[in-house]
Image (cartoon, rainbow, N blue to C red; front, side, top):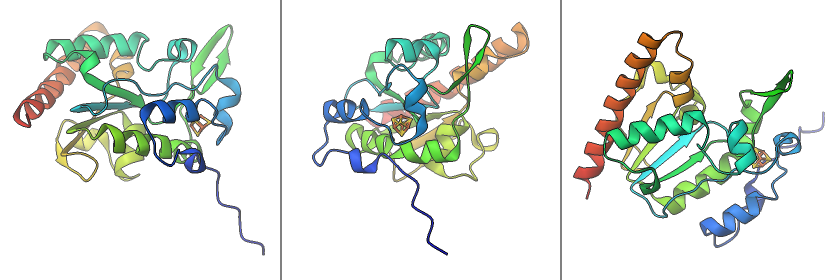
Length: 214
Ligand code: SF4
């Protein structure tokens, strides 16, 4: 039987001497997985390079897809508010997603977010790896299971390990927690307030680690 062809990834598109600008320009042309076809544009990371803090989400959402910027929709606004509560300005952090194109399915006139599959995540991983190599964060915060499992392995469980800064070769500390969109999906106000407070406590831990490392 003929060997199965290797799944396609973005690896051949990574420039030889990458800068964030070169990566962003190359990623804008990426067709390594099918997600580019139904999305408006590639949504690459943004923020200072290098940066003490890097945050990684899952995929761009509807508004991010239209605007071409990560974390500018409702979940991004909540993230900004929670970061501000612990004294971190959004523009001090490099913010990106594990997968750079919006994956969605139609519901009436709306475009509903869909979770990327393992092949799409693997195809996009070289962009994320290249970003981490340039940003060189002291603290890497992984927002949600997709980001955590992309970088820490498929066995990693956010529900078990959330909020614990761990030593890693990716950054001095890596901490996984929930994605802010999960906070917005809380079933009622009381749960949402409680979950947001929990998330802010975790970010406070991040702020403390960052402060110690300067
Ligand atoms: S999701 Fe990632 S790998 Fe897939 S086309 Fe977009 S940039 Fe390329």
